[in-house]
Length: 444
Image (cartoon, rainbow, N blue to C red):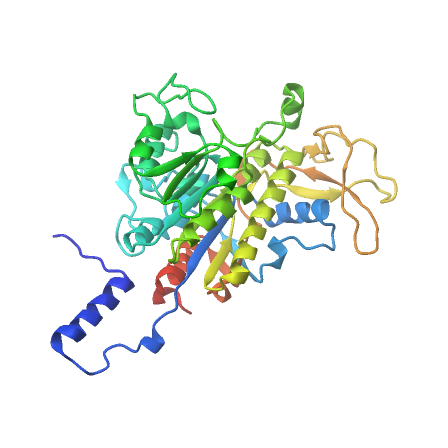
């Protein structure tokens, strides 16, 4: 038997229709009590723990300064476990955020070959629920477009490595805005694109398919910054792979590569353009944005790369703060799903006034230590505190993978008062539904 599913918007329409058909003059629904709804912008600086933000603060604005992230008024402690593990993978974390239910660590919108049922008992992410309700949606990523942090909201596959299929599902999803890298997964092997040749193992040219499906396809920062506001659907592919070079400092130095591709747009620029297109549709919208470099540089224990990625993530927050100032019927919510690299920043030297010129390779317990250009280099210099004092610091690493703990949720705008105390990873979906649909199930 087929199960029927209704959104709050459907039920409201049904009540109105019955009122007209039956000629009933009795007040069936108190519209003054109807839940308020608005747009949602979910920001995901992957792998960014409270310690990552603390390191960025002293480096970028000083120990007494304030980041954009610091100015978000609502705060809660994030609980990150999956169905079968205490620490999640990026794909499991994204699936938890997209569906609002506990899933296994291997999940990428699916439980192996089986679909995941959301809290409403249907195999649909919250982004597909928004699309079904006629709302515009978008995803933005500084990494490849098939990264799970955003792709899990629009695609479902048995394995994270299925980039060809993930890219195909993205192009056929119908999402209004999709920005990221990874052009290589949208073209057949050997076919020349804007940034390089395709690597798909089939003959499917997804860029041509996207154009047939009504997408404007763009490749450069100039095209992004000059994108007409009335663009209907847009696919932006701003790099052959990621928009950054996630390697160790030593490898980047040897190859003469910068941490980020200077020709590619920043995550803040992509976010601003996405908001501009979605806002022009005159409807509440859902936008999911991921700065992936915060995770990838941390997992390579690349401290300067991580700090630059964090700086870009904070600029992304700043873009949303400017938007919400003029559009208060918007929820901005930000959270990582893991603690990448187990980063810690620490002072250098027994005497604060005479830190070492060069750092040793490890702490006394063996933990790797990074300075301004990797192992064995000078310590970082913090921005001055409010008295003008300047401190030196280093970055210490615990692991090359993702761990748990030390993650905070911050929020501002509509319904942000619910972000407090202890906050489960599945509550991201509930907050999105509460704001998009006025879903009363989350109210407390």
